[in-house]
Length: 188
Image: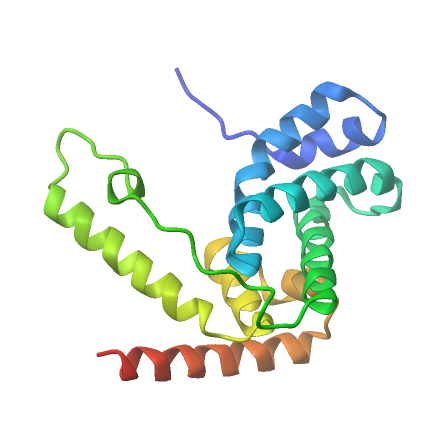
């Protein structure tokens, strides 16, 4: 049996028409990636969950303003991004980011029967080290790296999400990579 990957944008028109099943499908597709992105920015579990929920509520209310169905993902992430920016503005920039929650190594990566536990542990440690370095970056730099490398958005889509000019996004990406490289060199 051939399985075809479902294109989430096919549900956008149905969601705009008010079909709850379409919203369920969109929520199922985007809730986890959106949560990961938001959590990496605000570093607080409950706040991240609240932002994801508020993002979908805003999306339901304002989907009529979305002109191109294919731009649903960047539009949705843009709503979440603006909610994170609102938190940064309300609180002291440094106080807005909480200590990262401890990660249980047993939950860091699912073990398959064939996987080598030492490789899994090394991968989890490397991931934790990378995320710890990423956390040291300024929020605009962290945001562009997460959107580009984790969510695989293009630079143009990142500009849509963040509301910044394409040149600004390119500049942030350049300086974010430079800062991350410097942090990597300092920690070796």
